[in-house]
Figure: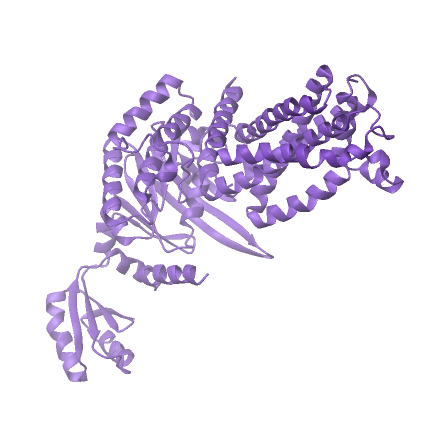
Length: 338
Length: 253
């Protein structure tokens, strides 16, 4: 058999044209439409995208929870379609829902988990003690998990995921619902795991998380990878700076103004986000005086102006035509409405 | 070996969980005892009547209560499974290499324990009030009824995973519980029922367990009725376990 793109040698996770359909009544909805990716061993790989982009579905296929409809996937060198049981031995998984056994104590959770991977009773106890120590669970490990705070529970769940020293650890939106302090703690734990050689594959819809934590990022939208690379690379590809101009009042002519600015030679692209015009320029310092000139000529009142390097959101915006912040906020309000 | 070990681990997990929720243990015991205390006295009138020849009303009634307990012990499994699906426990366990059959059997065997232990208590409590158990028959009866618990537990597990909503599960289960129990002659023997009811009972699997239970409680272990009861229960247990294991394997939860 010839080597297929999904079989990238040495990759911790690789997929080729991975697809998944869901049936919604009579219509067939494609949730994942041909994802190709390659995760290098020992890196933290961020799968970034808005809610409904197909992140979780992809993760669930890679972790054997969902059957793969088409395409190929290899995890830790094993074909996910052909040998799901072998994949399960090699991976750890921390789901969105958590999966802590709430009526049991943290330690009991850990011991059972290790036992299910075949550890002896003594081995399971030793490994549990080790993780309780290294992940600092000692303060609550012998309390029933029902009494844990969100941050404590998440720490236990990460411990459950790495109990059997997996080659690849998958985490689905690991920091959703955590306060900034706990989020920072979890990031630090994941970095430590990477230092110890674990490959980490995580989904997130937080730009900051992908930017700060991931070695490489795949930006997903509508079931497809629209960009992949290190956060720095992705941002550098956008070359230049972003000038954000916020007007004082909701000026009726703002769209008109945007069009004018978009026509300027020093502006690569101009986008409207609420009352803010975002200008993509090659050099912020050079562009700024020119921008002020145009604004003065248009006679509009400024609320604020800022110059910044492009963020991953700008990358997302450029690839999809939407802002990840907007889609995330939209999804959040839709959830509240539902 | 690996399978037995996994079943043992997961069974223990469910037992610990159950013991830590003493309310359920209490409820599980109080219902049959209430039947004994508040329903059995109503049957005193029938004592010595055509279907209560053996003398004591409890000799007919206790096996009926035991069937009801066996049936009820498994029926609640679906609620627990929905909760475990919602909290991600099932998902986490499904990513481990654990056998899906073992995942199911942990719950099923917990339910069997939750039938057998209260059943022994009820038998012990009923004796001073005039229940005369035939020991051999009663032992075989508990085994037969454990199969009933296996069936209802596996069935409820599968339904819980498929329906995934407490409301729908409750509707299906309570909707079926009443006709199934009434048409099995659990509380009163069907021999006093009109013919059409007796005919209808034959399509109710529970009926065969109840019929066998009456023979067994009178000490008749080797009889066509008992054989038929075991045959139907073993067949159905195999079928529901297979089905429920399949739902665990496919669960999109």
